[in-house]
Image (tube, rainbow, N blue to C red; front, side, top):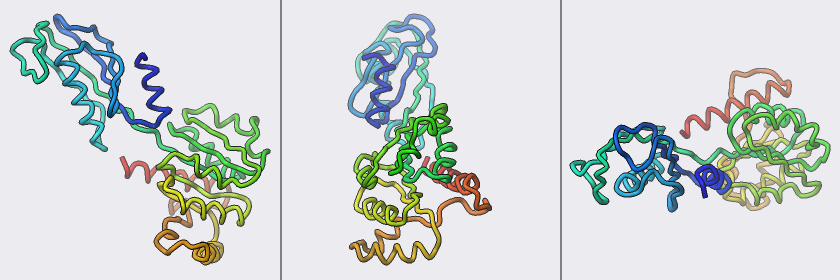
Length: 267
């Protein structure tokens, strides 16, 4: 498998990795500039030349995988019999510079309810590099023509068309998904919250609605067997404070800002 397909595999399986590239060569080296190696927690693909250089690069890459704050770095490696070597001597005599680029798992966001606010929010989020799950029980809200503007950005948009029981989609969400419940039906909202609180998938759960709605929901969720710690996982109201307006676009902007801020605090 070449490095491009390896990166696609990591993205599809939501596995973190590091792309290692030979960016500069001086003198003799086993591979020319541009050679690449993809390093995952338990596997590698490609090669930057084998031997001590490659083994050292794999260990350095995996150290980056263990660091949640890791960013791209370059390092110079000497290939002479006088250079320190933990994994066998390479005496090509040259020197290479490697670029280590962490490839994190993409963030996942799910929007349940693609009405006016849901659509405006999806439009904003589609401009970010993330996995975007859109769920609605109404077929027209997820029509191809309506979703077309969302398909032009970097987000991987996945529409879940479920005419009945949209809460079943919860089982298909990646672990760590930020979930927003914005449906047109309070009964559907309640069923979704019940399913989400029974799942380990959500990193966060947001609910749109008034304080009166939430008071009723808290009572109903308790009656469904959820304790107060579980119910406290639900955030409502949602959206960053200070962004005024009840128009769908304004509400969506406030929610998107809150999501982006949350992401930046995690990184």
